[in-house]
Image 1: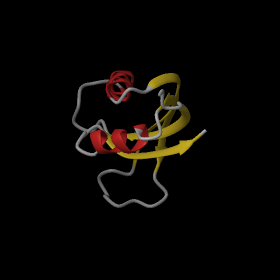
Image 2: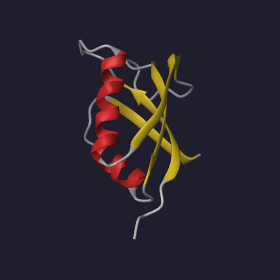
Image 3: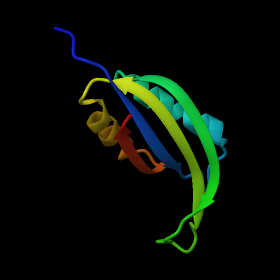
Length: 98
């Protein structure tokens, strides 16, 4: 029996402080992680750099936001969050059903 695929939209806040990679290279890394958890990326939108409304670290007041649309099994978002938890380039992740 095939599990049904669902559509998701994820917002990633990327942290590239102290790294030489560009934002596009960081997005490619996130897309590879999505592919590892058997997700299929359908669209990527680089929103650009935005300042945080609530600053938790005075040295980190803003970051690059990226929206990624992907499809996958119902357990894909939880698996993706667990894989990205230890990834130092992704500061925050928000996933919603599309």
